Amino acid sequence: MFFTKMLIPTLREAPSCADIISAKLMMRAGMTRKLASGLYEFLPLGLKVLRKVENIIREEMNAAGGQEITLPLIFPKDLWVETDRWNVYGKELFRLKDRKDAEFCLAPTAEEAATDLVRKEIGSYKQLPLMLYQFGAKFRDEIRPRFGVMRSREFLMKDAYSFHTDEADLEKYYKVMFDAYTNVCKRCGFKFRAVEAASGAIGGSFSHEFMILADNGEEEIAWCDCGYGANSEKAECLPIARTKEERLALEEVLTPNVGAVEDVAKFLNAAPEKFIKTMIYKADDNPVVVLVRGDHEINETKLQSLLGANEVVLADEQAVASVSNAPLGFAGPAGLKGVKIIADLSAVEISNAVTGANKKDYHLKNVNYNRDYNADIVADIRKVAYGDICPRCKKESLKFSRGIEVGHVFKLGDKYSKLMNATYLDKNGKESLIVMGCYGIGVTRILAATIEQSHDDNGIIWPDNIAPFNVVVIPVNYADAKIKETTDNMYKELTSKGVDVLIDDRDERAGIKFKDADLIGIPYRITIGEKNLEKGFVELKARRDGKDAAKFLSPEEALSEIIKIFNK
Ligand code: ATP
Ligand code: MG
Image (cartoon, rainbow, N blue to C red; front, side, top):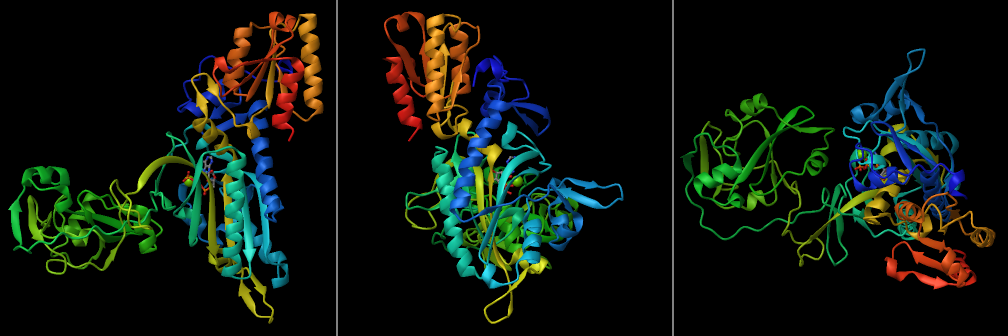
């Protein structure tokens, strides 16, 4: 491809709407443009990378036995009512009506449609297992579309659905897909970790996320050298054991106008870990009291799944007052009646704790579990924190890294098949529920995440396998007959060997061509200049190496080096 024939509108400065390095670089490199909030156009260079990633994924899905299909992008409401996700998905679901006022949604994911297809077409155990996958646009009305194509409202996803006769077969296949996702990440050249994850709105019993490690990642990963890794939203917390202390008598203390743990801690000169933080939530409109240690945070995802609720939100002041008889900041578990109390494993371990007294301007000292209060449920409901011990090896402290979730694999079990009555007849002619898995990977997000992980001050540094081109050839002056001849010859040779090459044939200064080549991030650059060529040399440089790493080679040697790298 010739630069002058391709729409590559590079920019010196990023548009002000770009809020993260990858979004800036994608726009500056002429890969994407923004149409409206969370809606992006992919220009030829951007689409080229997208297709390369898509092909790697397609090859791995086919190798895992998958069959490619396409499902509609618009789904009728009825299907989503069957699984109650018409309600559960909430405001993220784009909803629309047709001319007859019938309701639809734009696909945010496609479990319902895939299950519907299979319940109609599959009847016997002989047709299972089956894995169907597609590449398709997904639409989610994100609360905060941001970070360019990383969190957009329309994006490209590869979604896959597998169907099995039983859990054991799903278990086996889940490992196959886990490996396929691992291969995708390796072939795309990522530094990544696969971690245990919470299942979120898709539901199901078990899941892993594939995280690209990057400082700008929205997710936090907790991990240990023993092999444990989890999204910090999901990471298990071991109870922090009680220190041996004699139980003292309960005491009420005046704490005028100080409600927040840090303020009361200062006022009473006590450490925050001596406090029981008492928060009142509404779980699907029912009030619940939640207790964690003063220096810990409540993990609402864990709380929600423990309660099996569709929604948990902090209660408003009025609800707090009606549960605790006191304003915000003065609630405590001692003496509370008629409301469900859920305590974290570490909260009940505190001896002689400080809590609110359910009375304005008062706290209680020396509160002890099983003496001054009880809980309906004691469970792990807090966020993992620095200093926590690994829940698997129980020896090392957990380490934390930031990551970008690019893929998510789930064991769904019979969640969808039960709700949608997707069954098959087993060997004995008995009707059984199909067991399912689902597997998503964000193709557009992969591009942004790769750039977050792989760039420098001058621009993008694409990994070899997904770069828009394998090599850029820069004739310093394409109008010069000898340079043109060498350039054209290289183009012919490289393309005939299947190497994807961009010739920068623009009538621009060499400095501008170098700047754009670095910005676009093509892994190799061959520069053909007059003086070097007279001496029989061209210059070959890898994008990831510094200026000094350039090699001076004959045109034939440069060609064979590139062909060796890309035409394996
Ligand atoms: P997140 O927690 O980041 O919102 P999710 O858990 O909602 O992600 P899934 O429903 O598991 O995401 O979707 C599968 C994949 O689709 C994700 O791993 C991610 O790569 C991609 N993805 C999800 N939401 C978006 C979005 N708004 N923009 C771009 N890609 C997305
Ligand atoms: Mg989401």
